[in-house]
Amino acid sequence: MLFGGLEAGGTKMVCAIGDEKGNIIDQAKFPTDSPDICMPKMIEYFKKFDIKALGISCFGPVDLNKKHDTYGYILKTTKENWADYNIVGGFKEALNIPVGFDTDVNGACLGEAIYGAGKDLENVVYFTIGTGIGIGLYLNGKLHHGTMHTEGGHMYIKRHPKDNYEGICIFHKDCLEGLASGPAIEKRFGIKCEYIENNPNFMDIESYYLAQGVVNAILAYSPEKIILGGGVMHYPNLIEEVRRKTVELLNGYIQTREVLEDMDNYVVLPKLLDNAGTLGSLELARLEYEENRD
Ligand code: ZN
Image (cartoon, rainbow, N blue to C red; front, side, top):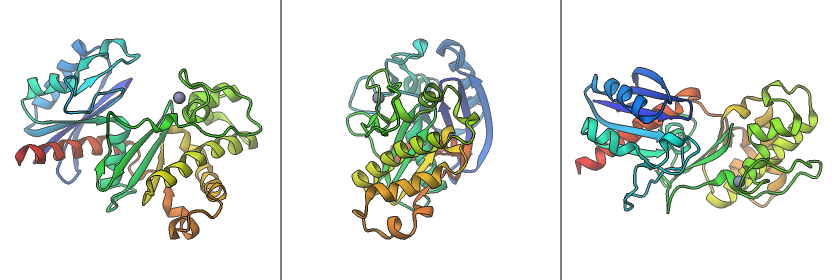
């Protein structure tokens, strides 16, 4: 049985066809032009295959609440052409199949939870640390939503004593995203994260902030696995330092085997690399198909 997956990003739309076991059969990418240019191309692509449902992992903010009139819409976004756009409705009307919908970070979280680093677990927290910081939550075997979707990247954290950078978040300045995202690193050090070499300040400050994110996730959700993805995590040895500081900041309060003995397998990098979002989208499609069958 075939499903369609769409990873809708700010610069590109990654379309994929796969089966119910997560085997990717075909893939196509389109630039994220305005909907009137981009949607017909994607619809034409998906129509070439006999897919039973489509799953969309989408840049946000989005409305995920099925009780709302604006469910399936991209809400107020800086990508003006897509603001208030009914992306789920657009595909439903054209393809006439069930359409699953979630945020991009939840999509990647689902992919990792089902097929990647969180396989066979029911409680997984996924961080993406790149242009922004987002947190996907897979709790009790399901993606978590609530009134909208969580915005854990904007949690408030303690400032590093040596850091006097004000923070880049336009809402909060020095929230987690404001202090630890790729653009925050670039502003603070005057150089992109990937070009920073041998700067002990960078390692110390960045890992301190990310460790606080991890600590808060452990305290709030008691997850079975924490996955740290996104471009910033490609920095050599950053994850080791985040693990070390996480244990230090917890300071003996959490006495689980994972924290005391097994941090290397508890706080980990993603396994699926670039495919997490695509596999998550295909799983969103499969779940929506199952839900509509009942
Ligand atoms: Zn913020």
